[in-house]
Image (cartoon, rainbow, N blue to C red; front, side):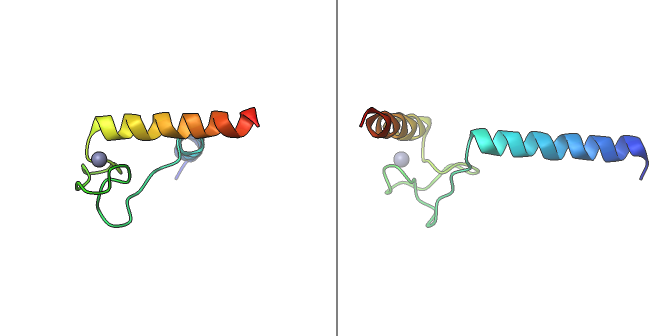
Length: 70
Ligand SMILES: [Zn+2]
C-alpha cells in the first residue's frame, strides 16, 4: 500500500464518520418498520415506506424542539 492509498482510505473513513455522525443509522430490531411497526422494512432502511421515514423524522424533530423549548 502506498501513500496515495493510505490517504484515500483515511479520507473514506473520515467521510463515513462524518456521515454517520450527521445521520445516525436506524436499524429495525425485528425486521418491521420502526415507525408503524406492523409492516416489513424496505432493505437497508428501518421503515416500510418513505412516508413512515418522514413521519418518524418529523416526530424526532418535534421531540427535539420540545426538549430545547423547556
Ligand atoms: Zn411503516
